[in-house]
Amino acid sequence: MGQKRKKLCTVCKSKGIRKEGVIYMPEHRLSLCEEHFNEWFEKRVKEAIKEFKMFDKREKILVAVSGGKDSQVLWYVLNKLGYDTDAFFIHLGIGDYSDESMEKVLALGELIGKKPHIVRLEEEVGAGLPVLQNYVRGTACSVCGRIKRYHFNKVARELGYNVVATGHNLDDEASSLLANLINWNLKYLARKYPVLREEKGFPRKVKPLVKHTERVIKFYADLNGIPYTDRSCPLGDTANLHFYKEVMEEIENHALGTKYRFYFEYLKKVFPIFSALKEEWVEGELTTCKVCGEPSPSEVCFVCRLKERVKKDRTQSG
Ligand SMILES: [Zn+2]
Ligand SMILES: [Zn+2]
Picture 1 (cartoon, protein in one colour):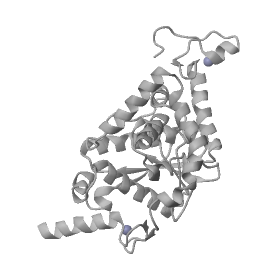
Picture 2 (picture 1 turned 135 degrees about the vertical axis):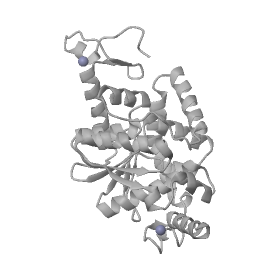
Picture 3 (picture 1 turned 180 degrees about the horizontal axis):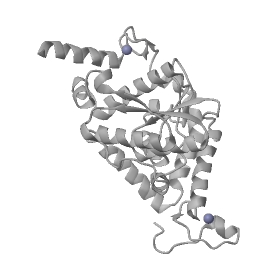
Picture 4 (picture 1 turned 180 degrees about the vertical axis):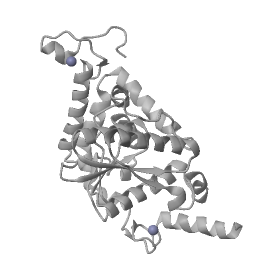
């Protein structure tokens, strides 16, 4: 990956300056020095925000951070670009994995002078994810996803944020598009877009890093000294996800630029057709949870049912 021979920075060269690049991105045919890489990276984030009309500087944005490189970079870069952002972290109660992730979030907060909002599952729901996953069917990841979504929505509304931003990158989006196309998962495809408008009591959801690959995001994090954890969740079964990422990477290596084209041409050419049929594919009406008041497909929402289970178990064993 560009280590063979250092290339000169393309931008510097255009100004008649000979300066070695610190990264070479073959998919863009671009070699950039430190300064021009940062400039380029941030410009593309701004472009994605504008192109998909994600938000503007008057809006309050809640960044969902996990302590991993993508969401940490997202919080850092939005803050640097002058957007009104705060971070929200859910401590999942997964031993030192959760502790270390939280430390990285707090460290970044210190770096940029902001205090993240933190929710601890053990306090909020009564138990951490390792216990909660036993109460329901489905993988730890799907349970975790539902719990996270619930809290993002709730915290955003309670604290007055109308936008929730997540750190999904181009590799995440292209590989999940591939997986969902192969399985003709229409319900998912109808909502596969970098912006989901606010609806039915939910805040707007945005993915400002969709134009960047994992490699580039990691490079930006390291270059700018952004703290993040490299560990992946010990409960996560990500084999399937990795498989599609590898397949995508293989296609990319075969024809540079395919990953980008695959995803963005989908958004332009196919998504409008699928999204027009959304009503037919997306699940039925939502009602309001009679315990917590959050939007829910059932009378009592998923999280309130979990809380109930934890409480019941505790009284029985206590
Ligand atoms: Zn340069
Ligand atoms: Zn509820």
